Image (cartoon, rainbow, N blue to C red; front, side, top):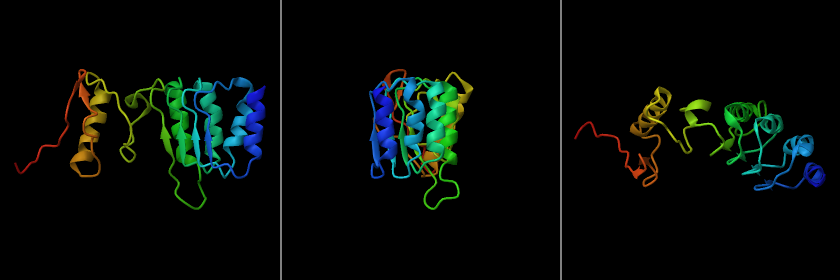
Length: 178
């Protein structure tokens, strides 16, 4: 399997800092080598957009990043589902424990089959894209938390990117002194 040989080479490469594997279908046979490659301390950024990964693949990726120095993991466009997204978020929070440096990891999971309201919202790390159904209590709760963050001056909605029922919508906090 060519992908297995590819990840064996990545695992043995001690100078590779970024792994761009987006739009590749690696297959199930190479997942053990992929996990070993992700554990290499020199790899700081991994991009696996639209690789056809599912929740079972997320288990392997989570094991790899939980034991890595990776700073950015991009898995957008994979059908990870709620359980796969949760697994990756959990692993991203535990990596680098007991090691020097910043312990945070930037994980990008757009269009992975799990809305933000279902995988959990972390107000301490609110960045990202949200698709909220305001008829659901959990979505309203996430939106309310985002509004509190903006009102406190600790974040912002990107102008021109918010829509309501398909139409552009500007979200601004109300000035209490006005």
